[in-house]
Amino acid sequence: MQLIKDKEFGGERPLFAVHDVHLDNVTVREGESAIKKCSNIVATNCRFEGNYPFWHVHGFTIKDCYFAVGGRSALWYSGHLKMSDTVIDAPKMFREMNDIDIENVVMNDADEVFWRCTGINIRNLKLHGGTYPFMFSNDIRVDGLESDSKYVFQYVKNAEIRNAKITTKDAFWEVENVTIYDSELHGEYLGWHSRNLRLVNCHISGEQPLCHAHDLVLENCTFDPSCDRAFEYSTLRADIRGAITNIKNPTSGRITADSIGSVTIDQNIEAPADCIIEERQ
Figure (spheres, rainbow, N blue to C red):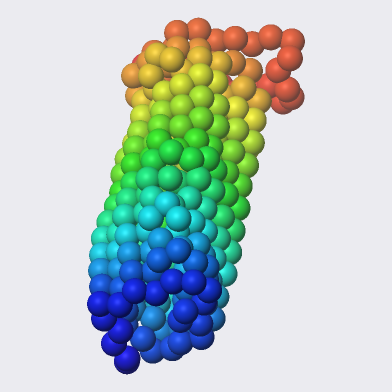
């Protein structure tokens, strides 16, 4: 593997179509597509300031690096990436990618990151700001996530999320086959129009959670008092520990809680309208 160390590059495609290269302490200045159509690339202690540095790259490692604001849209149409101990200030990262492994990464502008990606394995990721992280992505495994981005995990399929703290709005809409363990989910309109969404040992806050959901499962979950009008038009099995403020028009299934503040069943409930709602004895 060729070593390129202590260098600076800029302009258009300075490292186009290189292969089997280790970049160490390299700075990519203003320009575009610095590392394009490449394979077997290792980048350590590098700084990326120009647009689109890693496009159409297959088989690469990024460790102890920094992506400045100008390094936007840095990782697209690529695969087989391992990234660790890296700070990203640029938006629109990770698009149309596969086989992504991430550990100890901070993203300070998480706008439109991880779009249409397949095979994402995450350990200890922090997302700040931005909208729609993980849109249309599949086969996701997360252990350790802090996020205050809006509209996270929309239209996602086949995901397992553990030890997350998510503060957001309209999260997990239109998801399919998603399980969330041991997490805090804060925000309005959680999990609407989902299919096979399962929450285990989770705490939920925010208005109108988990409505229009199909085959929803809650196991040993708790609710903040702010959670009113929960489960409207949903089919579900829910085991709730502690109190829930209000349940409205669930379609079918069973809801069991230690305490239920109120239940709203009105003329707008949808058939079969046979959900069993009970306080635990």
